[in-house]
Every structure is written in structure tokens, then in C-alpha cells.
Amino acid sequence: MGDTDGKDEKHEAAPPSGSAVRDDASESSCYATEDDEETQIHLGPKISIKEHLEKDKDDESLRRWKEQLLGSVDVSQAEVQEPDVKILSLTIISAGRDDIVLQIPESGNQKGLWFTLKEGSKYNLKFSIKVSNDIVCGLKYTNTVWKTGIKVDSSKEMLGTFSPQAEPYTHVMPEEVTPSGMFARGSYSAKTKFVDDDNKCYLELNYTFDIQKDWPKS
Image 1 (spheres, rainbow, N blue to C red):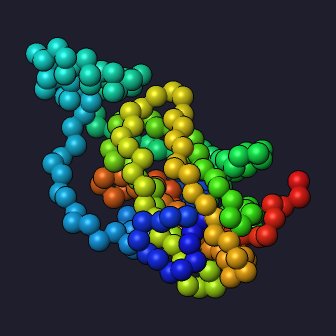
Image 2 (image 1 turned 60 degrees about the horizontal axis):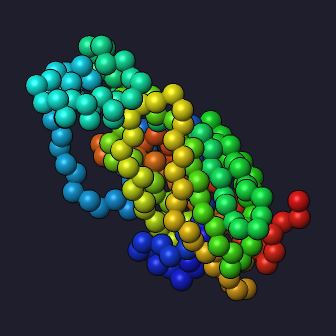
Image 3 (image 1 turned 180 degrees about the vertical axis):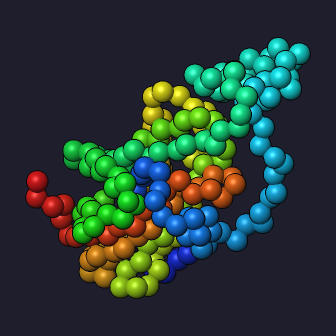
């Protein structure tokens, strides 16, 4: 979970942030990430998968690598298709406890308390990600957490490049630890985004969670 010392740098203990279905949020909120100060790179025009393969048809090893990356996608398509990324679920994994499996609301806005974690507990986040139509490049996860209106954590994690395939990908994040102590307990609000290299947002998820002295009774 997020540290409560007000750090805005790479998190040491960032709160779980969701995964989710294709976002229904506005384009303006999705395409601009508030903490992203990176220089925007202007890429060339997109070309179709068929054109990608034709460019290197004489290089056998490169052609095989591209075909492997493309997986089950229909390489005969002539038109350019935008990648479709759906984050199907978020699982919170903590040793000695049953996994907390959370389905993502289609609206991107989880109403009410989404989950509760115990203070000082170690955990991993696991996302289930479905990619269709085309390769998605540089998919990254960003998460911002507030407590009583004050930003207490901001984190960013590069997930990687994914080719289309029938089965969802599983991505497990590095282990983290929830903060502990009297001032760490209470309610938090969070915003999670999944964006690619073009700054296209596939999910913006808003939710609340609690950190308490003990795990909730099942």
C-alpha cells in the first residue's frame, strides 16, 4: 500500500490498484496522466500487421520472430486495427491468506469500499490482461493514492509489450508492504490507469480501500 509520508517518488509500499475492462472515462482524463512529465515522442503512422511482415520477408529470423510475437492474430488483414486491452481482474496475494480476487467494474468507478488490508502486511498484485486485434506497446500501470485529500503515494510500473492472443496474460507485480501505525490506518482513495506508449488509456479506475489493524473477518 502507499506510504503515508507524502513521497511522490517510486513507491516503496503502494496500495493495490485495480485492473479493468476498457475504460468508459472521458478521453481528456484518460489520455493525459497528471504525473507524467516525460517528453512525448512523435511516432510515425501506424501500418497494418500484413505490412509489418512484408517489410522483412527476406530476413527469415526476423520474420519468424515477428510471427511468434503476433501469435494468433490474423496476419492477412490489410487494414490497421487499434489494439484492444481489457484488464479483467485484480488479485491481491498475501502469504497465509486466501487470494482476494476483484472483478473490475465496467464503468471504471467502484462504488463503496472495495477491499480492506491489514497494516504491515506483505502482498503482491496480480493482473489478468486480455489483448486483442494488434500489439500493444509499452503498457504501463500508474497508481495515485490519497488519504484525507492529501496525496500520500504515486507509483508507476512498466508492464511490457503484449501481442494479441486468445488467453489472458497474467502479470504479477513486485512484493510490497502496507504501511502500519495509528496514522496509517483508515480510508484511502485511489486512481489507477493503464496506458500505452502512445499515452492511450485503456482503463481509469477510481476506488476506495481501508488499512486496518487486522484483516477483515471472512
